[in-house]
Image (tube, rainbow, N blue to C red):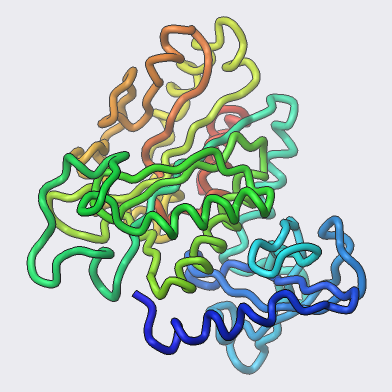
Length: 365
């Protein structure tokens, strides 16, 4: 939990946050670092409130300290691409998500957004919708929050969607994050306690096209930032605790306009057939380490499929692709891809799905 210094610091800082800004605006630039998991930020003062990314200037940062460059040529550019209200400093201040690129326009190796934008432009008439279920675990130092110092809590079973002391850990963080995302105008759809104690989930969506990546990445940033104030660590590791404990995923719900219309189940099955033929390609893109992280999670146990095999099913939580029962009954709706890991890049996930199911051009990543 929070250290003594952090506890003292919080009220000291809060007394200054309502001071008049003199009409000027603080804009926090946010970007993905060289790990393709961590996030960085720094703040610029601007003279007027921006209403779109185009209102903001390109900035730069020390790429050698973020895994994007060496010290001899360290400047990497920040190009604003998505803007949100700032839940930490309040209006009119902003959070802005940025692309990262070099002086010559070459993208950093973790900038997956640009190709996702190009793919979404090609399929815009299909109106692809995405919803991602972001699972994560709260840590107190190296162990999950409120776990015993020696040994383990009771086995899984009573923790999922539970209430009460001894069953739920960290709810104030979850409530703060939920409200902060709503304030920021992030499309957060809900939240719940998960199967492992101190494991939680929130849902982003439905978002059309590129918005799913923008909103999920910024929601992660807000989560990290709030947990920081509580002195707690958030891990997106897909298997943070070995043994008989659930891992963490980022199940991706997906549909096109035809899937959502009457008779859409036909197009859902067609999409699943296409996905079955690109299983290995998707696995490589569904975690930041080419599938290595998901090897620990996709074991065929703990509500996962096997990483080596693809199969689909109705209401089957051990399937690669699940068709929710209400969609099967209605004959339309969406599919759930249960393979993406909790630390996935949503730009890669959404890119791969539309590339396989709509563009369908025999791509190889």
